[in-house]
Image (tube, rainbow, N blue to C red; front, top):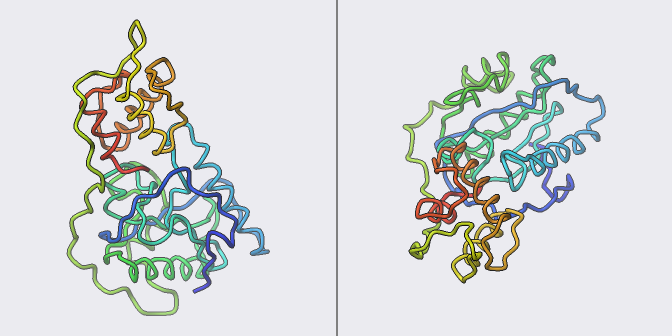
Length: 268
């Protein structure tokens, strides 16, 4: 396997600490799709991985803290380290799906054929993750989530067990294992709603919540004042949590459920 580390491809540091996930039921396969065409010169592929990471870090809806995939594979059979082994992905569509499978992405455009070189690289990536905590399930992004990813041809290969070109088939998948649980426990709810009011609320409970949101990667000022910025960040966090399988009332108020989610919902 040809493996390129984060340092080697020039990764930016994550915005916040990635959640550890030492085991998973298996691996889900993704693609980038779109108009991409694999360059003849492999030296250009690292730039595409950097572009994927930058797109994810800049996404205004998902609020990813890093490239979403554990591994990325180019059309030259080279495996690039994304979040890496043993880390929760952010790519599978929602929190339960991210907790169940690691994520591998093929750098393949919508109109590109599925080559043996890409299959070999994907198989290397899958086996690398299986050697580092992944179970035997191999699925596509569309399994359990409404999407066309990873395209019909790549999905058919995945559905066939992701066989390595030239012979041999994967071992049968073991029985699914329970997904890992979140790693943090929220401190007790302080008993007061954190919300915009007059006079403006200012206390250590607000500061503690703001610090937690900053630790998660949200652009919030930690000053103990619950004003318009805090309410906006709260509302965006509630929307993001709901979209990722952790439903919250979207009201800009830190009540018991939002307080708990601020600590216990894994960072995505």
